[in-house]
Structure formats: structure tokens, C-alpha cells
Amino acid sequence: MRSLDIGSTGMLAQQLNVDVLSNNIANMSTTGFKQSRAAFHDLLYQNINRPGSSSSDSGTTLPSGLQVGLGAKAAGVYRIHTQGTVKVTGNELDMAIKGDGFFQIDMPDGTSTYTRDGSFQMNENGEIVTIDGYTVSPSISIPDDAVSIDVNSQGEVIVAFTGQAAPQTIGQLQLADFANPAGLEAIGNNMYMETSASGSPSTSSPGQNQFGTIEQGALEESNVNVVSAMTQLITAQRAYEMNSNVISTSDEMLQALTQLR
Amino acid sequence: MENSIYIGLSRQIALQTNMDIVANNIANMNTSGFRGQNPVFEEYISNPTNGDDPLSFVSDYGQYQMSDPGPLRQTGNELDVALVGDGFISVQMPDGGTGYTRDGSFHLRSDGTLVTSSDMPVMGDGGIIVLPTDSAHISIDENGVISDNDGPVSKLGVVEFANIQTLEPAGHNAYTCPESGVEPKNTTVSQGFIEGSNVKPVTEMTRMIEIMRNFQSTQNILKSEHDRMREAVQKLTQM
Image (cartoon, rainbow over all chains, first blue to last red; front, side):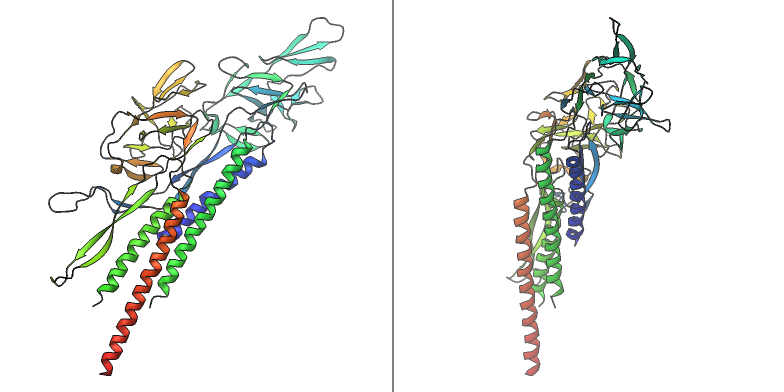
């Protein structure tokens, strides 16, 4: 009975689908989170009668063959890098990217990671750091006596000092982008790492070369659409049940066979 | 003498194939661009005694693809395309041949090659589609022309077939065909959508119940035939 195995491939595929959807729903309010989608494909086909094989001596051929598919399989899990909604927080070190690009973060081990989560803080040296304390590249130090910090849409960091009429530009934020952002590897903590599938990063100032712009005092929320995530979850659960029904039907057919005597 | 058992058996073998096809349809309920299949049975007539009572067996003869479109689901992803109409998108199979798919969930490799979710390169008018690595804001119009911020780049190889039953499923959401397709007339491309599987769960579940009941009733025929033969042997030995 192929149908027993086919039913189990379907159940495994739907299981993965539920896993991916539940991760999306769990990260509904994670800043800068990008939702994933599981893609499936059909497995190999077993040819019982090949289409086009001859059906008589006079050269007629079968118009359609008998090919039995052997089930479904997960082809991959892909992240969908659409823009999340931008929520205004008013915090002067919160930054959202409107458009393409990632903030580049220097990890303690010397590697670079990339994130869309712009909820930044300041460390004891005045450097702009992530919530985990890793510095944002290129490193920008904000002087102790600065009274206000402004980041414009081009990523220029401008600070004002008491007693000085003109504010000073002290740094320029850079964004990194990839040929194929969907190929980035997620490593948790809202961070991504470059892979051979993503290509190497190209960096630019925000607002130039098709890169996105910076919105200060705002954060990008996750791009999970709750309504569609819930409906997909229902579909996945029902599909799982139907596949389990396939298995029990095949089981009953086998049971009927064992009673034949 | 055992012909009635063999006829019942032929029915059960056909029902098992039918069940395999239904199971495959249900397993692929969430596979994008999947086309469900229906089995075709035929009567196979055999005339062992050259008399007036030919025997009629059932044979699982072939299957055909359901050609109705699957439901479109909006994803908003700029590299997702769905086909409206009967066409297929040409892809390059791992063996170098041309395959056809309705699964438009495309992705980019790091060198800009447009690939399907099974990593098969998508074919355009002039071979494999490679997008410039710096392209942003990719838009695909209803004729399949792919443009980025610098204008048109390539065109999706959309083809139609006179008879879609000549397409042979090859796995990985792709089909192969001995004939090459023709220019599309009734097919348009919509970006940001994915076509789901055209399998209808209600139909498949009812078919599954029907298969099981048919299987059981054939089983009863076989059982009563078995009983009849046993009784006959017993009666004959008593004489």
C-alpha cells in the first residue's frame, strides 16, 4: 500500500507547515521580524504505464499514462522580506528602515551580522549599541555633553551641545543590502548572517542607490499578518487531519485484506 | 472456476491504485501550483472459452490531470507570481531539459539567477533569467515582463499547450512534455500572488470513503465466493 506512506509524507509536510506558522505567530510583536513560509513540492512519480507507450500493433499510443505520485515534501522555508509596519516610539535612538537594507552589527567574535531591529541604546563609551550591547557599524560615539541626538533620513547623526548655536554632524550610519536577502541565515536575536546564497553585502548611505531611509524615533514591527497566519494555521491543521484519515483508510483496507480467507 | 475471484481481485488492485492517487492528492493539498489527478479505468474483456459469456475485468488504465485553476493567495512578495489561464512557466530541469511549472514562488540565487522553490532556474525568452544583483523593486507585468528600477530586464517564458494531458508530472512541481509549448493567448501573470493546489479536500475525502466502501463490498463478494466454493467441495465429497 503506497497510500500509507503517501499519507505520512503529507502529515510530515503539514507538521513543518504548522511549525513555521507557529514561529511566525510567536514572533508577531518581535521588532524587525520577517515572516517565513514553508514551500512544498510533489515527490517523484512512479510510472505504471508510461504515457506515449504503444497500445496496439498498429502504432496507437496511450494518450495518458498511469503515474502514481509518492507524496509531498517540504522544498524549503523562505523568509518574506516585505516592509513591516513602522511604529512611532519617540525614543531618539530607535530607528526604523523604510525600504531595503540592514543595520550592520559588529559581533564580539569579530564577525558581522545584519538586523532590521533598530532599537538601539548607548553604552558606557557613548557608542550606539544593540539591546545586547553589540556595536553598530560604523561605530558612532555620542559625546557625554550632547543634549539632543538627531538622525536624519540619510543616516547622518547630528548632535547639539548647550551653548552652541549650530549642531554638529558626528557620524554617518551605513546600511548593508544583499542581492538575495531571502538567502540570509537567521541566527536568532533578530540577527542574520551572510551566506553564499545571499551574496556578499553592498553598503551605502541610507537613501542612496535604492537603499531605504532611516526614520528616527520609530521601530519596524514584524511583517506577520495575523489574520492570514491564523487562516493558514487552520488550513494546515485540517490538512494534517485529512492526511491522517488517508492513513486510517489505508489501514482499514489492509484490515479487510487480512480478514480474507 | 476461479474467474469470479480474479474479477474481484482486479477490482481491488484498481481500487488500491485509486487510493494511492487520492492519497497523493491529499498529501499535496498545500503544494503550490499542484494539479490533482483522477484515475481512469477501463473494461478489459477476456473470453477464455470462446463462448458467449466473455469475462469483464477492470484495469487501471491511466490518469488525467484536473485542469481547473487552484485558488490564488496573496503573499505580497515581489518574486511570487501566479498564472491566470492555462499556461505554464518554463524552467530548466536538473538534467538540462525544459520543464514546465505553475508554482511561481521564485527566489534569487546570490548571482541573481531566478529559481523556483526547488532551485530550478526559470527560463526566459533568451535562456535562463539572471537579474542584475543590484536590482531593486522588481515588477512583473501581466505579460511576464520583468522590470527593475532601470527598466525591463527579461521576460518569463510562459507557454501554453494544446492538450495539457500530454504533460508528464516529474516531481518538484514540474512537468515535462515531448511537445514544446506555444505562445500564450489566454494566460496572464499576476505578481504578488501564489496559486495553491487545485485539489478539493471535500471531493477527495468523499472519494476516499467511496473507495473504502467499494473495497469492502468487493471483499464481501470474494468472501461469499470462497464460502460457495467450500460448500460445493463439501457437498460433492458427501455424494
